[in-house]
Length: 361
Image 1: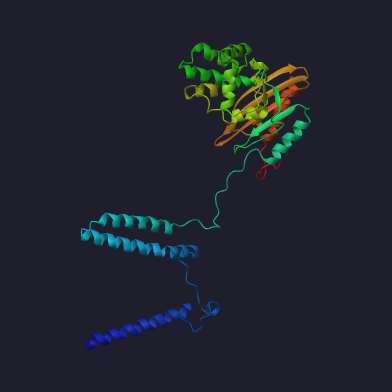
Image 2: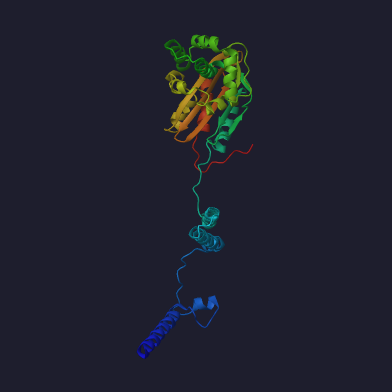
């Protein structure tokens, strides 16, 4: 009808006028094709960019996959309608196309998008240097090793062997608990009492009784499980020689070789050493950070060259874990020896004021 035709033409004219007015306001469709000139046009405003350039490029790359998906789904539907015997094969192809298209349009974080920074390792490189400098002032026979919070081992004279003293009672503890588990024997009250005395207040008679059960063979098995490389066994537990590196390896992986049924008992003992013997690493940990939980074993005795004090410890604070071992000999007296251990540990546990970096060796 004429009136309808006339109304249609009027509608088209109104639409055309509206488009022209919008173009004039935004600069779109302006006489100049130069984007720079268009941007300078008075009153021009830039339309918001709804899709970032990186996402547009990913969507463009995904377009063929999306088209393949549509075609495949259509073929699958037609095959089903025709009761085609190859319908299952076509449907499988469609499912494959779905997987392809999904992977094609998956978006990844932009390259410049900030990511969560990982905590740097403890101890810091400066802390290790400070501990090394301190160790040099405390005599010739001083060594230490630390397995840092990233599981890397560093140290000073860390592979040098020292007389073990009572530090290897921690190995006797694990050896006896493994023997009981292997034999299917319970942890009877007598054995529990021996192990408690041996660890919590370092009773030598208790250590002799446990060593009589496990011998060098049991200690060698424990050393192998912990990856210890330079343990020297000499037919009696107190005559053994160990290194700081090996003791740090053990305390960095303390729980794993302990039988699960005895793990809580063993770890509880190593965390319950009497206060009189909680010098060295636990004393340093207490003053460096409130959150440290420490499991440790120490040893001390006079030697031909003076006094030795050795200690190995596991330290935990939430998800952060590290292990420290310090070995000494030739110290003037017991107090000086324990101060040496604590001084090294305190420097290793010092919290840096800035980011930590690995020491260059």
